[in-house]
Length: 288
Image 1: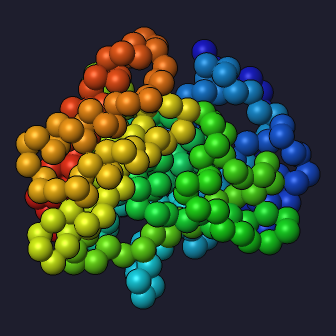
Image 2: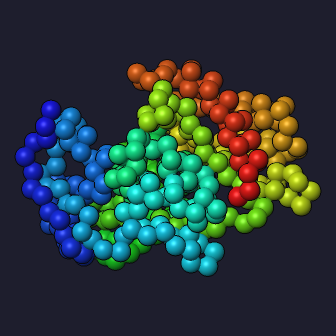
């Protein structure tokens, strides 16, 4: 299929883009890399009357360290994130996720801001951003504001953004020498959305134990699901095989995932436990 007819705008500034969103309201849609929006328009799941393309807006494509914070422009591509030495060194779970988003074409065109704002429940970034304690900076008619990742994802395809707001930056604290992180997912093909995805961020104590843990799952709910019980298990003793299995079992409790053409709910519950163990071990075996 082809999209319905629409007006196309390519503003040269953020302010102009915000003005267009304010003018056309919910009839308008933003486009970053287009890898989420365009397929939905072709299927006519979405039929916006206006499309506001951000490709000409300057200063939204960057990766930089600002003291103890990594700042990422919303138009930064998955390819750039996966290949960035800074991201690989300081936020390896984010590099993991960027490397498994779609196929090479999607990774070259798609952006972290566009993917996160799309808020698919089985996408790769949301669980990682929540686990890493990310914050979203957005600009709207009333000026900029910041939203923690834990509050940003509100439901499937629904975020805390107002219709007239644009994500401009995603920031995360730099992980220290005692932190380790990883992201792993199960999918039918490497280019598919996650049947189950798991992000793990661990902190090592001076005694070599797990002193802190954040484990967040995707694909098992309408928003990223934090496995708090599993985190407590991981902090209770050495990370041996028995503890990883116990953490996996804890992560499975109280899950209520959807069933769809990719997998049924019970299968998602079962593999969630397995992937929690695998992801925790992958994080524990690497620095940062």
